Image (cartoon, rainbow, N blue to C red; front, side, top):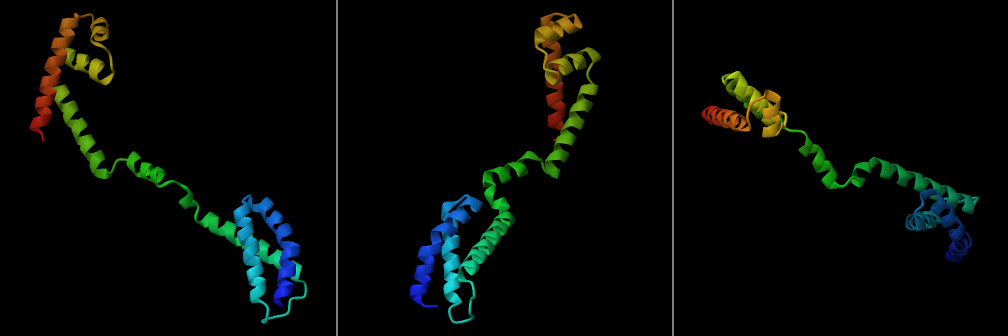
Length: 167
């Protein structure tokens, strides 16, 4: 195919072909690239084989290039996820060592609490585990606010001592 024939084909079909591809891929730059690649492939076929219907060859080549592009994009889908989002996946789940350490810590905490008097255990549970305020604990257990503070101070001191000894 002569250069003038290729130029004539380009002027006649490029705009229509690009419009068709733009509607399909919704990206004018990508459509322009696919059109250019289609014409390059047509030019490469110059001496190799005779093409009976050149416009049909162009449209089929452009369509095949578009399908190839879409398939490549689907294979690379993880590239469209920001790196920070992938880091969050790893950070959300603790590792085996962290889980084991947390379980051991909770076991030591339960053992230390079990050695406290029942009223002190209850004050600690309501305040530290269930989030009650000192006044709410006092009302719940029908004791004074200062008693709540004394029980809590006793529980915290004992628990901290036990946890530090077991390290």
